[in-house]
Image 1 (tube, rainbow, N blue to C red):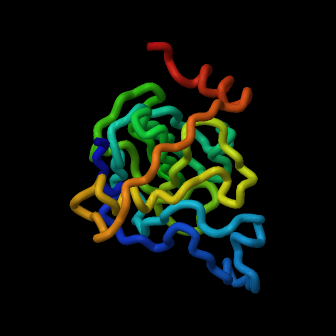
Image 2 (image 1 turned 120 degrees about the horizontal axis):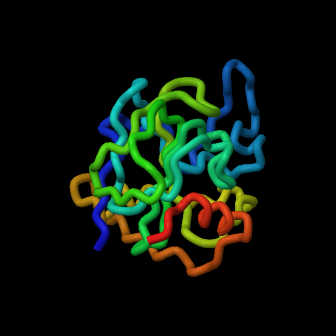
Length: 193
């Protein structure tokens, strides 16, 4: 079974699906994320300071390192890392980093420092956004931009240190294929074995 750790020791500042209604003094009566066409926040935010170490939440392969705007799934994320775990069929996105300490194709271990938190991209203050994206065809128009709730991985039985009583193990992501654009990008960014 895959084991997990938290990406940082800092507290959660915004949970999965949470909404907010005031962004930089502008009020959004129906919610900021809903104004974007989303169902709510599509990851978990941790209130980090600039330069806090950020850890791999599980063993895996670094699928992408670079500017989020250069990746079809990570736009707006600033300096990003995409960590893939093939056993689970899941990728974990790390957004808004000030520094990335890994390279595409690198194998990493759970708890390994892979970057430093920051406020790059669409961020108003330093923090870490951690999201979970199933491997395969991603529907970015599903209201979550193709993300699934990372909470069961981080606070469920696969992370005994932080498991919430009664949490269930997430189901494997459904098998599917990449879109041609995603496959082209992956082929270019990952070195051959």
